[in-house]
Image (cartoon, rainbow, N blue to C red; front, side, top):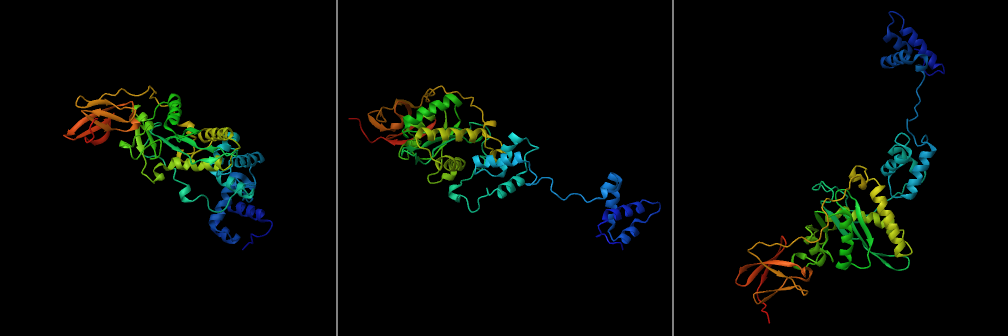
Length: 382
Protein backbone atom coordinates (compact mmCIF):
# COMPACT_ATOMS: atom_id res chain seq x y z
CA UNK A 1 0.00 0.00 0.00
CA UNK A 2 1.40 3.40 -0.94
CA UNK A 3 1.33 5.91 1.96
CA UNK A 4 -0.58 9.06 1.05
CA UNK A 5 0.79 11.12 3.89
CA UNK A 6 4.09 11.90 2.10
CA UNK A 7 4.85 15.46 0.88
CA UNK A 8 4.67 14.25 -2.73
CA UNK A 9 0.96 13.45 -2.36
CA UNK A 10 0.05 15.37 -5.52
CA UNK A 11 2.63 13.30 -7.47
CA UNK A 12 1.07 10.11 -6.12
CA UNK A 13 -2.36 11.28 -7.21
CA UNK A 14 -0.97 12.01 -10.67
CA UNK A 15 0.57 8.50 -10.86
CA UNK A 16 -2.73 6.97 -9.76
CA UNK A 17 -4.73 8.89 -12.36
CA UNK A 18 -2.33 8.09 -15.24
CA UNK A 19 -2.39 4.39 -14.39
CA UNK A 20 -6.17 4.39 -14.02
CA UNK A 21 -6.54 5.94 -17.47
CA UNK A 22 -4.53 3.17 -19.16
CA UNK A 23 -6.52 0.72 -21.32
CA UNK A 24 -7.96 -2.19 -19.38
CA UNK A 25 -6.92 -0.64 -16.01
CA UNK A 26 -8.71 -2.06 -12.94
CA UNK A 27 -9.62 1.02 -10.90
CA UNK A 28 -10.74 -1.04 -7.89
CA UNK A 29 -7.38 -2.82 -7.62
CA UNK A 30 -5.51 0.49 -8.06
CA UNK A 31 -7.53 2.02 -5.23
CA UNK A 32 -6.57 -0.85 -2.94
CA UNK A 33 -2.93 -0.49 -3.99
CA UNK A 34 -2.90 3.22 -3.21
CA UNK A 35 -4.92 2.79 0.01
CA UNK A 36 -7.88 4.93 -0.99
CA UNK A 37 -11.58 4.27 -1.39
CA UNK A 38 -13.18 3.85 -4.81
CA UNK A 39 -15.13 7.06 -4.17
CA UNK A 40 -11.89 8.97 -3.63
CA UNK A 41 -10.28 7.37 -6.65
CA UNK A 42 -13.08 8.37 -8.96
CA UNK A 43 -13.08 11.88 -7.45
CA UNK A 44 -9.43 12.40 -8.51
CA UNK A 45 -10.12 10.95 -11.94
CA UNK A 46 -13.00 13.41 -12.44
CA UNK A 47 -10.94 16.38 -11.26
CA UNK A 48 -8.09 15.43 -13.58
CA UNK A 49 -10.46 15.20 -16.55
CA UNK A 50 -11.95 18.62 -15.75
CA UNK A 51 -8.86 20.63 -14.73
CA UNK A 52 -5.78 18.56 -15.48
CA UNK A 53 -2.89 18.23 -13.01
CA UNK A 54 -3.93 21.38 -11.10
CA UNK A 55 -7.18 19.67 -10.22
CA UNK A 56 -5.21 17.14 -8.16
CA UNK A 57 -4.19 19.80 -5.61
CA UNK A 58 -6.14 20.25 -2.36
CA UNK A 59 -8.86 22.87 -2.58
CA UNK A 60 -8.74 25.79 -0.15
CA UNK A 61 -10.80 25.12 2.96
CA UNK A 62 -11.27 28.79 3.63
CA UNK A 63 -15.00 29.72 3.72
CA UNK A 64 -16.32 31.69 0.77
CA UNK A 65 -17.50 34.43 3.14
CA UNK A 66 -15.65 35.08 6.35
CA UNK A 67 -15.51 37.97 8.80
CA UNK A 68 -11.75 37.98 8.26
CA UNK A 69 -12.23 38.27 4.50
CA UNK A 70 -14.97 40.93 4.52
CA UNK A 71 -13.68 44.10 2.88
CA UNK A 72 -12.50 46.92 5.05
CA UNK A 73 -15.25 49.17 3.67
CA UNK A 74 -17.88 46.58 4.56
CA UNK A 75 -16.61 46.18 8.12
CA UNK A 76 -16.45 49.94 8.62
CA UNK A 77 -20.00 50.38 7.29
CA UNK A 78 -21.35 47.64 9.56
CA UNK A 79 -19.65 49.17 12.62
CA UNK A 80 -20.81 52.68 11.64
CA UNK A 81 -24.42 51.53 11.39
CA UNK A 82 -24.12 49.66 14.68
CA UNK A 83 -22.80 52.81 16.33
CA UNK A 84 -25.78 54.79 15.08
CA UNK A 85 -28.27 52.01 15.90
CA UNK A 86 -26.88 49.98 18.81
CA UNK A 87 -30.11 47.96 19.17
CA UNK A 88 -30.21 46.77 15.56
CA UNK A 89 -29.30 43.14 15.01
CA UNK A 90 -27.39 41.56 12.08
CA UNK A 91 -30.52 41.15 9.91
CA UNK A 92 -31.41 44.85 9.99
CA UNK A 93 -27.78 45.87 9.58
CA UNK A 94 -27.43 43.61 6.53
CA UNK A 95 -30.47 45.13 4.81
CA UNK A 96 -29.42 48.73 5.45
CA UNK A 97 -25.74 48.10 4.64
CA UNK A 98 -26.73 46.64 1.28
CA UNK A 99 -28.24 50.00 0.30
CA UNK A 100 -24.74 51.50 0.54
CA UNK A 101 -22.44 48.60 -0.32
CA UNK A 102 -24.62 46.70 -2.78
CA UNK A 103 -25.87 43.14 -2.34
CA UNK A 104 -22.68 41.45 -3.56
CA UNK A 105 -20.36 43.42 -1.28
CA UNK A 106 -22.53 43.09 1.84
CA UNK A 107 -21.44 40.35 4.27
CA UNK A 108 -23.94 37.66 5.21
CA UNK A 109 -26.03 37.95 8.36
CA UNK A 110 -23.87 35.31 10.01
CA UNK A 111 -20.68 37.14 9.04
CA UNK A 112 -22.07 40.42 10.39
CA UNK A 113 -22.81 38.68 13.70
CA UNK A 114 -19.16 37.58 13.86
CA UNK A 115 -17.92 41.05 12.96
CA UNK A 116 -19.97 42.51 15.83
CA UNK A 117 -18.73 39.85 18.23
CA UNK A 118 -15.08 40.42 17.38
CA UNK A 119 -15.58 44.17 17.67
CA UNK A 120 -17.07 43.74 21.15
CA UNK A 121 -20.47 44.96 19.99
CA UNK A 122 -22.48 41.97 21.24
CA UNK A 123 -24.28 42.68 24.48
CA UNK A 124 -24.79 39.62 26.62
CA UNK A 125 -27.56 39.00 29.11
CA UNK A 126 -31.31 39.40 29.09
CA UNK A 127 -33.03 42.17 27.24
CA UNK A 128 -36.27 43.76 28.29
CA UNK A 129 -38.77 41.71 30.22
CA UNK A 130 -41.80 40.18 28.65
CA UNK A 131 -43.93 43.01 29.97
CA UNK A 132 -41.63 45.55 28.34
CA UNK A 133 -41.53 43.79 24.97
CA UNK A 134 -45.06 43.37 23.65
CA UNK A 135 -45.49 41.37 20.49
CA UNK A 136 -45.30 42.96 17.06
CA UNK A 137 -47.26 40.16 15.43
CA UNK A 138 -49.04 41.14 12.20
CA UNK A 139 -52.70 42.09 12.33
CA UNK A 140 -54.01 39.06 10.46
CA UNK A 141 -57.54 40.47 10.20
CA UNK A 142 -56.34 43.56 8.32
CA UNK A 143 -55.05 43.77 4.78
CA UNK A 144 -55.05 47.40 3.64
CA UNK A 145 -53.47 50.62 4.82
CA UNK A 146 -55.78 52.91 6.80
CA UNK A 147 -58.15 50.11 7.76
CA UNK A 148 -57.14 50.88 11.32
CA UNK A 149 -55.03 53.49 13.03
CA UNK A 150 -53.79 52.78 16.54
CA UNK A 151 -53.56 55.74 18.91
CA UNK A 152 -52.07 56.22 22.36
CA UNK A 153 -49.95 58.42 24.60
CA UNK A 154 -46.42 57.29 25.32
CA UNK A 155 -45.65 57.46 29.03
CA UNK A 156 -44.21 60.86 29.82
CA UNK A 157 -40.67 61.77 30.88
CA UNK A 158 -38.73 64.93 31.72
CA UNK A 159 -36.47 66.92 29.42
CA UNK A 160 -33.20 68.20 30.81
CA UNK A 161 -34.81 71.47 31.89
CA UNK A 162 -37.53 69.60 33.79
CA UNK A 163 -40.27 70.12 31.21
CA UNK A 164 -42.77 67.31 30.77
CA UNK A 165 -42.54 65.34 27.51
CA UNK A 166 -45.66 63.35 26.59
CA UNK A 167 -45.96 62.21 22.97
CA UNK A 168 -49.20 61.45 21.17
CA UNK A 169 -48.47 58.55 18.82
CA UNK A 170 -50.58 57.50 15.82
CA UNK A 171 -49.70 54.50 13.69
CA UNK A 172 -51.16 52.61 10.74
CA UNK A 173 -51.78 49.03 11.87
CA UNK A 174 -50.99 47.33 8.54
CA UNK A 175 -47.88 49.18 7.35
CA UNK A 176 -46.52 50.16 10.82
CA UNK A 177 -46.13 53.68 9.41
CA UNK A 178 -45.97 56.22 12.26
CA UNK A 179 -48.22 59.11 11.27
CA UNK A 180 -47.63 61.16 14.40
CA UNK A 181 -45.15 61.34 17.27
CA UNK A 182 -45.88 64.75 18.70
CA UNK A 183 -45.16 66.12 22.17
CA UNK A 184 -48.34 67.75 23.50
CA UNK A 185 -48.75 70.54 26.04
CA UNK A 186 -51.83 68.83 27.47
CA UNK A 187 -54.16 65.94 26.72
CA UNK A 188 -57.43 67.87 26.56
CA UNK A 189 -59.82 66.86 23.79
CA UNK A 190 -59.56 70.25 22.09
CA UNK A 191 -55.77 69.99 21.87
CA UNK A 192 -55.81 66.44 20.50
CA UNK A 193 -58.62 67.23 18.08
CA UNK A 194 -56.48 69.99 16.57
CA UNK A 195 -53.66 67.53 15.95
CA UNK A 196 -56.01 65.03 14.33
CA UNK A 197 -57.46 67.69 12.04
CA UNK A 198 -53.94 68.15 10.70
CA UNK A 199 -53.43 64.39 10.34
CA UNK A 200 -56.74 63.92 8.53
CA UNK A 201 -55.92 66.79 6.15
CA UNK A 202 -52.53 65.23 5.38
CA UNK A 203 -53.31 61.50 5.32
CA UNK A 204 -57.09 61.22 4.90
CA UNK A 205 -59.45 59.28 7.19
CA UNK A 206 -58.98 55.75 8.53
CA UNK A 207 -61.86 53.32 8.63
CA UNK A 208 -61.31 52.65 12.33
CA UNK A 209 -59.30 54.00 15.25
CA UNK A 210 -58.13 51.74 18.07
CA UNK A 211 -57.57 53.29 21.50
CA UNK A 212 -57.47 52.33 25.15
CA UNK A 213 -60.10 53.36 27.69
CA UNK A 214 -58.31 56.42 29.00
CA UNK A 215 -59.02 60.13 28.58
CA UNK A 216 -59.58 61.84 26.19
CA UNK A 217 -60.32 58.78 24.04
CA UNK A 218 -62.98 57.23 26.26
CA UNK A 219 -64.92 57.75 29.47
CA UNK A 220 -66.16 54.68 31.30
CA UNK A 221 -68.98 56.70 32.92
CA UNK A 222 -70.32 58.10 29.63
CA UNK A 223 -72.90 56.46 27.39
CA UNK A 224 -71.07 54.16 24.94
CA UNK A 225 -67.88 55.57 26.47
CA UNK A 226 -68.11 58.59 24.17
CA UNK A 227 -66.04 61.70 24.83
CA UNK A 228 -65.87 64.94 22.88
CA UNK A 229 -62.98 63.52 20.85
CA UNK A 230 -64.38 60.07 20.16
CA UNK A 231 -67.84 61.48 19.36
CA UNK A 232 -66.18 63.70 16.75
CA UNK A 233 -64.44 60.64 15.25
CA UNK A 234 -67.80 58.88 15.02
CA UNK A 235 -69.29 61.94 13.31
CA UNK A 236 -66.59 61.58 10.63
CA UNK A 237 -67.61 57.98 9.95
CA UNK A 238 -64.70 56.39 11.83
CA UNK A 239 -65.37 53.15 13.71
CA UNK A 240 -64.21 53.06 17.34
CA UNK A 241 -62.28 50.05 18.61
CA UNK A 242 -61.35 49.94 22.28
CA UNK A 243 -59.05 47.51 24.03
CA UNK A 244 -60.04 45.67 27.17
CA UNK A 245 -59.28 47.58 30.38
CA UNK A 246 -55.95 46.44 31.82
CA UNK A 247 -54.94 44.56 28.64
CA UNK A 248 -52.25 46.61 26.85
CA UNK A 249 -51.46 43.53 24.72
CA UNK A 250 -54.68 44.27 22.80
CA UNK A 251 -52.64 47.05 21.19
CA UNK A 252 -49.38 45.13 21.46
CA UNK A 253 -47.66 46.31 18.27
CA UNK A 254 -48.26 49.94 19.27
CA UNK A 255 -46.85 49.27 22.74
CA UNK A 256 -43.86 47.57 21.11
CA UNK A 257 -43.24 50.77 19.16
CA UNK A 258 -43.29 52.69 22.44
CA UNK A 259 -40.53 50.39 23.74
CA UNK A 260 -38.39 51.37 20.74
CA UNK A 261 -39.16 55.03 21.40
CA UNK A 262 -38.15 54.67 25.03
CA UNK A 263 -34.74 53.21 24.20
CA UNK A 264 -34.03 55.39 21.15
CA UNK A 265 -35.39 58.74 22.33
CA UNK A 266 -36.45 58.90 25.97
CA UNK A 267 -33.38 57.19 27.45
CA UNK A 268 -31.00 59.44 25.47
CA UNK A 269 -32.73 62.59 26.69
CA UNK A 270 -32.48 66.19 25.47
CA UNK A 271 -32.09 69.54 27.23
CA UNK A 272 -35.39 71.09 26.10
CA UNK A 273 -38.78 70.11 24.74
CA UNK A 274 -37.90 71.60 21.34
CA UNK A 275 -34.74 69.50 21.11
CA UNK A 276 -36.64 66.46 22.32
CA UNK A 277 -39.21 66.98 19.56
CA UNK A 278 -36.40 67.24 17.00
CA UNK A 279 -35.09 63.85 18.18
CA UNK A 280 -38.61 62.44 17.92
CA UNK A 281 -38.91 63.74 14.35
CA UNK A 282 -35.61 62.09 13.43
CA UNK A 283 -36.67 58.85 15.12
CA UNK A 284 -39.98 58.85 13.22
CA UNK A 285 -38.19 59.39 9.91
CA UNK A 286 -35.82 56.48 10.56
CA UNK A 287 -38.66 54.25 11.79
CA UNK A 288 -40.69 54.92 8.63
CA UNK A 289 -38.01 55.22 5.94
CA UNK A 290 -34.77 53.57 7.12
CA UNK A 291 -35.31 50.75 9.59
CA UNK A 292 -36.39 47.39 8.11
CA UNK A 293 -39.19 45.61 9.99
CA UNK A 294 -39.32 41.85 10.48
CA UNK A 295 -43.14 41.95 10.47
CA UNK A 296 -42.97 43.54 6.99
CA UNK A 297 -40.50 40.98 5.59
CA UNK A 298 -37.64 43.44 6.16
CA UNK A 299 -39.31 46.27 4.24
CA UNK A 300 -39.67 49.82 5.55
CA UNK A 301 -43.18 51.14 6.40
CA UNK A 302 -42.99 53.94 3.84
CA UNK A 303 -42.65 51.34 1.07
CA UNK A 304 -46.10 50.02 1.99
CA UNK A 305 -48.14 52.92 3.36
CA UNK A 306 -50.28 55.08 1.09
CA UNK A 307 -52.64 57.96 1.79
CA UNK A 308 -56.27 57.13 2.50
CA UNK A 309 -58.73 57.78 -0.34
CA UNK A 310 -61.30 58.92 2.26
CA UNK A 311 -61.05 62.70 2.44
CA UNK A 312 -61.65 64.77 5.57
CA UNK A 313 -64.85 66.73 4.87
CA UNK A 314 -66.14 67.42 8.39
CA UNK A 315 -68.99 65.69 10.27
CA UNK A 316 -71.53 63.61 8.38
CA UNK A 317 -75.14 64.80 8.17
CA UNK A 318 -77.24 63.39 10.98
CA UNK A 319 -80.28 61.65 9.57
CA UNK A 320 -82.37 59.35 11.76
CA UNK A 321 -85.30 57.11 10.76
CA UNK A 322 -88.76 58.65 10.86
CA UNK A 323 -89.58 56.43 13.84
CA UNK A 324 -87.09 58.39 15.96
CA UNK A 325 -87.50 61.90 17.33
CA UNK A 326 -84.45 64.14 16.97
CA UNK A 327 -83.12 66.38 19.74
CA UNK A 328 -80.03 68.65 19.92
CA UNK A 329 -77.78 68.02 22.95
CA UNK A 330 -77.29 71.26 24.91
CA UNK A 331 -73.95 72.48 26.38
CA UNK A 332 -74.75 70.66 29.64
CA UNK A 333 -75.08 67.33 27.79
CA UNK A 334 -78.88 67.13 28.16
CA UNK A 335 -81.96 67.13 25.94
CA UNK A 336 -85.61 67.90 26.61
CA UNK A 337 -88.10 65.19 25.73
CA UNK A 338 -91.86 65.54 26.35
CA UNK A 339 -91.49 67.25 29.68
CA UNK A 340 -88.45 65.24 30.73
CA UNK A 341 -84.77 66.17 30.89
CA UNK A 342 -82.55 63.38 29.63
CA UNK A 343 -78.85 63.19 30.46
CA UNK A 344 -77.06 62.20 27.24
CA UNK A 345 -73.47 63.20 27.95
CA UNK A 346 -71.30 66.30 27.61
CA UNK A 347 -69.25 64.61 24.88
CA UNK A 348 -72.24 64.88 22.53
CA UNK A 349 -73.05 68.54 23.11
CA UNK A 350 -73.91 70.28 19.84
CA UNK A 351 -74.85 67.00 18.13
CA UNK A 352 -78.31 65.59 17.45
CA UNK A 353 -79.47 62.31 18.94
CA UNK A 354 -82.34 60.08 17.85
CA UNK A 355 -84.84 59.05 20.54
CA UNK A 356 -87.22 56.10 20.38
CA UNK A 357 -89.91 55.45 22.99
CA UNK A 358 -89.59 51.90 24.32
CA UNK A 359 -92.20 52.09 27.09
CA UNK A 360 -94.24 54.44 29.21
CA UNK A 361 -91.18 55.43 31.24
CA UNK A 362 -88.26 54.57 28.98
CA UNK A 363 -86.65 55.85 25.79
CA UNK A 364 -83.67 54.53 23.77
CA UNK A 365 -81.13 57.01 22.44
CA UNK A 366 -78.96 56.77 19.31
CA UNK A 367 -75.96 58.75 18.10
CA UNK A 368 -75.53 58.06 14.40
CA UNK A 369 -75.42 54.23 14.29
CA UNK A 370 -74.36 53.86 17.94
CA UNK A 371 -76.91 52.66 20.49
CA UNK A 372 -76.53 54.84 23.59
CA UNK A 373 -78.77 52.60 25.65
CA UNK A 374 -82.11 53.01 27.38
CA UNK A 375 -82.90 56.05 29.52
CA UNK A 376 -85.54 56.00 32.25
CA UNK A 377 -87.98 58.92 32.20
CA UNK A 378 -87.87 59.82 35.86
CA UNK A 379 -86.69 63.42 35.89
CA UNK A 380 -89.42 65.98 35.16
CA UNK A 381 -88.80 69.41 33.64
CA UNK A 382 -89.11 72.17 36.18
